[in-house]
Length: 265
Image (cartoon, rainbow, N blue to C red; front, side, top):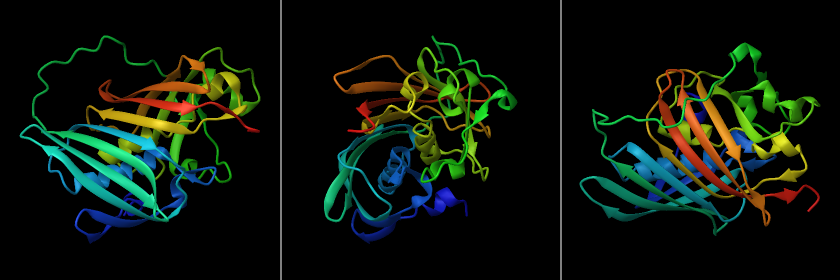
């Protein structure tokens, strides 16, 4: 069993309530990664929906989650022939830490219209990209192979910062686990915040809200990703993301709202 699958395991303790132990394998500075937590929330919701088409997953991060025991409580909002809508609450030590919602649609064999009014992001070859190295307490990068375009990796290499708040590059599991719905949710939050490319390590960027719309399940080993921030003010920023497969098919789009806080605050 792949490590990620093991770390998504839930134990049912009563109707629509599940227990798990949040793993330390997907942490950022000792805090459970938001994409990993969203993948767990999606796992809990999928226990109550047979639909898997184009899921829309949105989470509000009320407080940080640490590795350790957690409870997921699922609530059905509404179910119809086309959509299932569910909500899940993540609790640690009796306190609500995350509230997430999922909209799951019927899978269809035919995508009636495909029209991309934005091009597939151009990526340099893998060999020309900068792999994020192992970082103490950033265990996510012990398991995910993330390679940044050199134009946005200066902040990691002691080189000049980029002119734009943008990260683009490639990602896959180091143990070659295939991507599915849950893994795409993780990948959409596995790159460092793009604001670091232009500002360096001057701030920490905790997520307030994170939304992912998964359009297709990739069949390629690598995904190519583009994440941008255009506006920083009043202590907040947005991060817009695109996830594509190697065949030029759109896998997911994402948006985060996060804080921009000086590291000494």
